[in-house]
Length: 539
Image (cartoon, rainbow, N blue to C red; front, side):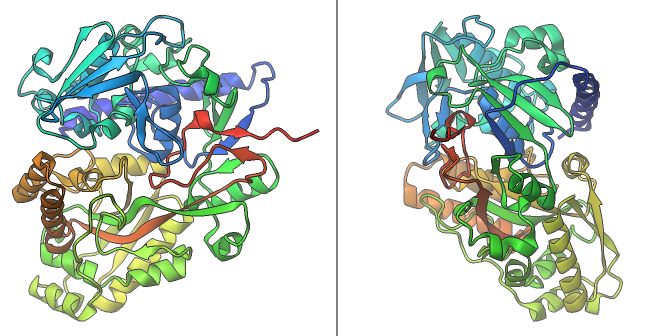
């Protein structure tokens, strides 16, 4: 991402957080507020609530409750179902989608919502000035990538239009089997043009804030909570289960568990919020729920810096990692060691073989790169955000690379929001990383590392890899498409290694099923807020 884009985004966020800090202080003087129907610990403080800017799963959970797209994910299997669009038609060649909006759509402020709002929202995300990190999700539209890159400036050439008040036409570059799933991603959610044009970068501070989803934003109090309230104008408000939801930003597993045990919270998302020393014991309890989902924990290299611009160095470090040692000593919930980025069980895809664990070969490659026995290898930093499990994994990697390769790594822990910014700006040498699939398809993992991708964040580029990803997404035959993706992944996490996959996530959340309902263990670990509610005790 060009520096100017990054600078604008950082400046916007700084002003945004400053405003909310003032709001948080002022909130302490407000009158006593009603209790929430449901209290959820949602991991760390959100980076933003702008659908076009977010990328973290914790942010998406909140934003999906506030802003909806043409489709949404149902809570049981996390499949795409009608959202703001009640139906759609697909052309025989699979390249044109015609969406039919519900005729009763309104913003939370009561104004009608139309197809023009959808077109505006998609073009806003594509606008280079917005600097969306997830903008590639719109590149399936004709001319969208060229518009985002500034090669064309006429928005009318982009493959989204509004033939009438209740119709949206999306013209794609090629058949895209998962396009309906893409339409449920927050980047494509519908946002209020009238408010954004009036307030600019401060639009989320507007009161009342028009939202298109199930919940209004009542307050965002930094280091305290985000409060959401049921939107009575939402098209499916009848089925929104909770009136008020509080989401707490808690990054400490011990704090999260203590709040839950004291009955101050009802639900805790994420395995990271379980004290690792207690995982074995807690998983035996009926209120701790374990499930498979599409997520991988991995390490990123900044390949623009020496010595990590040498793929032999990257391969050597990967071969020296005993991944099962990490899953058995640290994660301890039954996670699978990963040799590839795409998790097993992904729809219509079997990952290719990875490099494996081979310290002897690792030492040979390091010697070939000019560092026999680790001699002359520069000290380097491993960047990670504040979390006990990230720290333990960092220490384990540090020890393995010291013992097997004779190289020294320094650990650098930073606050989560600082971490995201540094990783995005390539201000690191190696960093902790993870990715959870947005839809059940290999593309959601592999397309991340195309040249210039907003979530690539490694500086790595391989034209053949880019061509394979593009060819796979042009291919209608499922078997041929799988082979193209397998060739691409072989380049990514076997030959070139801009990343080191460590393990496949196992989802764990904790809540009492006798007290909370509406949460199902699906492969995307996606749980729409409008489906969750407290069970009223019987009298």
